[in-house]
Image 1 (spheres, rainbow, N blue to C red):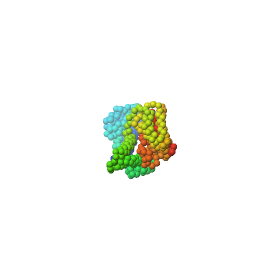
Image 2: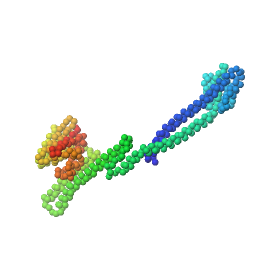
Image 3: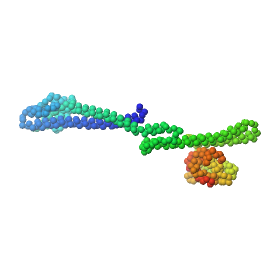
Image 4: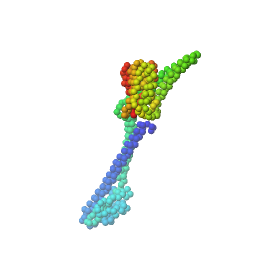
Length: 456
């Protein structure tokens, strides 16, 4: 039961509301109780004052005891017990209880001629003693009244408070439960919609009734997550399809060459040709798997690069020298303009693959008679590596996707220019791994320019 958010919210609401209600009830009860006791004391004091005033009106009489008895008898029939004292000696009383209360509380000992009333409580009875003077003599009027009526009224009020508190708490529990249910209804709806979404229908989105409240923002975040998951699943499916296709071609060639070689006896040269083809296709597969592994590690955040100081200009010159044979074979003019010697802190293997991939791409997609230019410039805070060619170029609508894995301009299954479609993905990975970026400017039939900017 306590696993339900609705129940927990209701309980928390009851706890907070109940605590506040208890504190307010106790405070209000204390105010009412104190006020009733204060009014009770004030009533006793007025009675004692009336007795003192009445006694003072009989100034012409010589018998003060008779005056005291007549003063006490003048009180209206009530629950009070009254007495009058002169210099601490009893003159008259209508009840022994008041005398016993005065004696037991010793209130006469603490009462002086300052005419301030003194209050005391004795056996659930309230006593007041009021000092006054008559003809230069100190007198005291005492009034005693039971507290049972007052306590009964306070007890009645206390029961009303308890009954009211229980009723209000029950109403608050019902209201809190309904309020929690209504507040969580959008969440229940969102939960039901989310349960119907799987890998097969990631294109569906949660319906947002109020995008500005907390649940609306939560649904918006969840929809954004679904969009990212949908994109990731789509890229993964395309990646798997393209990877399967890329690996199937060399495997088919290897399998075919092996079957032909095993079908009958061949000459040594024919066996060598078959083994050469198998070796080339195996190298192609190894390159594809290596690139896929590097990209997968980068996606998983496990790409740990060992950085070291190196001469980037020497790395560019070596890569251009290695690509010169391919450029000469295609009758392409390859020019390399490395900068002066400068030390760069990075991963040599990844930087070499980046340079080789860019230069190799430029040569592959440049027709015979064209040219490829490689430049390296060093600035105070960054270095810029630029590869330009006069090749076939890239259509404007394809530029944003050229760094996607296995993406090829035009028919993605074309093998005319070779390659696996992972080269530019490796270039982007290398640039970003060195706190840099890569940009491309291209125009169909006029060539392309790839610019890699690396922070120093």
